[in-house]
Amino acid sequence: MAYDYLVVGSGLFGSTFAYEAAKRGKKVKVIDKRDHIAGNIYTQNVEGIQVHKYGAHIFHTNNKKIWDYVNRFAEFNRYTNTPIANYKGEIYNLPFNMNTFNKLWGVVTPEEAQAKIAEQKAKTNIGQPKNLEEQAISLIGTDIYEKLIKGYTEKQWGRKATELPAFIIKRLPVRFTYDNNYFNDKYQGIPIGGYTQIVEKMLESPNIDLELGADFFDRKEEYMQQFPKIVYTGMIDQFFDYQYGTLEYRSLKFETRVLDQENFQGNAVVNYTDAETPYTRIIEHKHFEFGNQPKTIITKEYPSSWQKGDEPYYPINNTENNEVFKKYHDLAEKMPNVIFGGRLGMYKYYDMHQVIGAALSAVDQEFK
Ligand code: FDA
Image 1 (cartoon, rainbow, N blue to C red):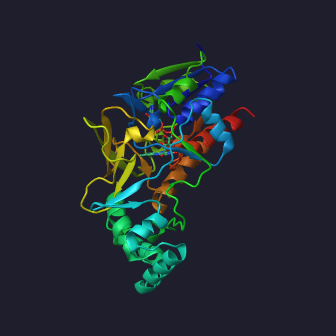
Image 2: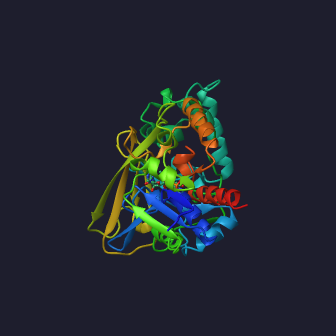
Image 3: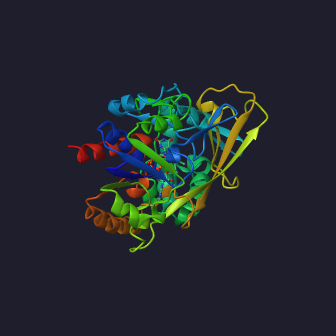
């Protein structure tokens, strides 16, 4: 068929765009270099459990329009994210709240907790924080920093907290209520039956053709000539042949195992906040969906450095990278036949609701 659009990437951005364009009668070809759809929200049924292949994904938003939109494609369960921290075998609730403070110090009322934090801060004697360690201690004192922040953050960034810039932690979410809900958003849940079905339904229109295992860069010139318009959700620096240099990322390695036991850790997400444990967290997938299968599946998450060819997970939005991105973005602005979008095209950490929002804005812009 004669296509109106080539969409590069079947993640949430590309698929939302393809769905909306197809709904408007446009003919769309979607390609993805992976052998499956859905990008990083891909979930796979193993032993009857939906496994989040690219890390834990919890949908949360304050935006009713986006919540209603995504609910068209799946029914959501009542999962509320309540991660816990394991510090050398001691368990603490996250985010920092009255349950955490009670376990740490035995305090019972918010007033007692506030007094304890004030006392810890007063002891520190830090002027203008010069690094992440000083920043965290000046915000919350030494106990929480030592047990719940230091080791985790150092593993995440692969550097000592004293060598990390203070700005990484602008503020620390602290709650003086007994509320373990990680997110403050109005709407939250996990799609019953997994995330992949959302993208499957988005792409099921007869106006959409899908080709998996197809890397845009294997046929870039041909695609650029053949398609009147391209929606590109891959890495923006790669599109421009890295002419201004390579944008940096942090990566992750996942180690997934099926265990012959029903319940491994009693919670979907457990953060390991000490420095010695090499992984930052263990995900037990069945607890996202209240599963009671005889087996369980766990994934250990190891932060890792990134080199070209690794999976780029988290953009490192420091001043240098942002300046390089701006140069690429300026080039992109001069290409009216290419829409750059998604987390790799915009070099930006987007949550799922934000990426749907960004795709719907691109649709409004395109079809106004
Ligand atoms: P995405 O990366 O999903 O899709 C891009 C697609 O393009 C991929 O399928 C890729 O294969 C393809 N592609 C790239 N280059 C190509 C090329 N050259 N040729 C062909 N195809 C190409 N959000 C949230 O709301 N709640 C959460 O709990 C989490 N948790 C979370 C954990 C971890 C570890 C990460 C890294 C991220 C999250 N997220 C999240 C964020 C969420 O994953 C994110 O918002 C969406 O997946 C972004 O969708 P995109 O379409 O932008 O990118």
